[in-house]
Image (cartoon, rainbow, N blue to C red; front, top):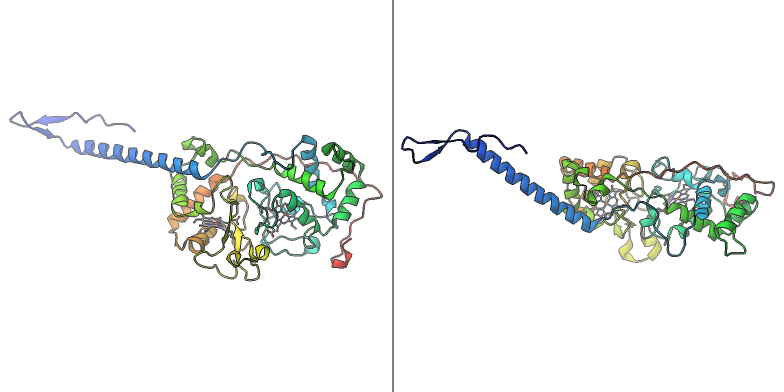
Length: 376
Ligand code: HEC
Ligand code: HEC
């Protein structure tokens, strides 16, 4: 801050004794006051940074190691092919990337997912970006990790509508896949299995991290990476209690909470039929509980909530204020929180679109029938 030139300008009284401040003394007071304010703002800034560093962690620059699934480059590459391969669906139309589009922040931009035969699934597709940091997968945490998760959609009738047997027959019928599975799982005699398919996909998904968000630069000490309103939003995010449920690397993905801790949102946003984690545990406390979702890249992944009923981030923040905190956030507070949430967008993974290996006469042909009886 520039200090004014006048702070020594005093005039003597007639007696020559008393110092009388010239009108400019006001400037002096203003300067002292604003210096004090700036100093306290700096102290506040430092306190917010310290609190943030205690609550959140930056996204690491590369894939984290997976204990039960050691990575190797050929496994990651195989997982990438599988992620994009629609022949893992019975229709040959739907791949993981259909609903977790890596050109769209890892989502499909649908309220709830649309899969085989145009069937609508019951829940919104969460992003695969940074999913590796979630303590468990799915809105209700029913898969303990990405490997277990990857076996679900291939078989789900409303998603890819295939079976483990059909998937393995498909992969075994394609020589390049057989060679790639052998290279990725060199210890195994029969490398082409449904489980190894899931392990390869998991290896690839672990690389889908989005480091270097402005918020991460801030966490690493570059405080100028956030402007004043974003810092204010961060302060509110912590102070109002959002960070109680949205903390850690992902600002979420660490625990389950009832949707509507204080006040249940309307049935449009929280459909009565989806009991959330209760369906997994049958414990009364888990009724209408869901995993607090990651808020990383949140500006890219509308619509929001497991129901996908809310398209605006500002509205989603307001719903959280009333349902989870019992607080009506002012418009200014919501705006600041939204400004902060937009600093969570990181560098998107650069994924070259893969050319998939050719199928052969032994590959099971596309089957677009919708009746469950047709699933083989
Ligand atoms: C038809 C759309 C669709 C397809 C295809 C699909 N998914 Fe999903 N995915 C979803 C939906 C919907 C959910 C949430 C379901 C739930 O929570 O019950 C989900 C959840 C996930 C999650 C959990 C993320 C989290 O934060 O909990 C991961 C990871 C994932 N899918 C990966 C995959 C992979 C890998 C494939 C391919 C093998 C795949 N998905 C295929 C729609 C789809
Ligand atoms: C008591 C725990 C809790 C608190 C406090 C909380 N949230 Fe949430 N948040 C959740 C849960 C659980 C969900 C998932 C709800 C659902 O869809 O079932 C969620 C969902 C969200 C979503 C939608 C994410 C998506 O991908 O669909 C946003 C945005 C969000 N919260 C922001 C906030 C903000 C901002 C605050 C503070 C004003 C806050 N939350 C406070 C638990 C909490």
